[in-house]
Amino acid sequence: MNSPSRKAGKPGRFAARDMVLLAAFAALMVAGQVALAVIPNVEVVSLLVIVCALTFGARSLLAVYAFVAAEAMIYGFGLWVINYMYIWALLAVVSILLRRVEGRLLWALISGLYGLMFGALCAIPYLFIGGVKMAFSYWAAGIVFDLIHAAGNFVTALVLIEPLMKVTGRLVCRSY
Image (tube, rainbow, N blue to C red):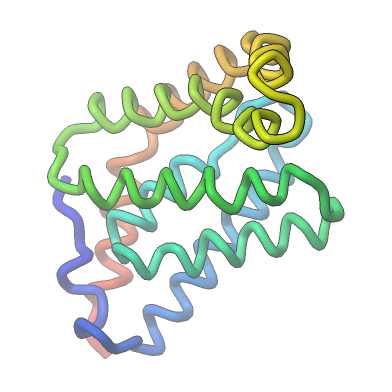
């Protein structure tokens, strides 16, 4: 499962195709999140962020922040928007740093671990608002949802990462 990122546009330049694909990733993140909102903590955004980061490297942050902006426009602004701004960017950066990792099982484990840590990452602002007790209680109250999130991320990545990487690779590498 090689990353097509080396072939996505020329370094330092944005090809029109890259911009369209980044916008498509952001739109897929929003559509996937909205479509699965009826199932608590089951989502495809984590997988799409990983695939986008593996494909586009640091440019994937454009899609991530477009997704966060769209979510804020749909659901309104709140503390969760600040969380999303660093949480999804962190997943993209981790994916970029681990881009040499091969195999769907390892990416499924990474995605599952990220889902498990999601509540702890969301609790960070509460350290500054109410201290360690508030942050811990926020995290502890949602641990069951983090377990569901971890399982959903693991299964989703295990099943879909290879097909998504193949399709994305074909789209990025296709010549005009």
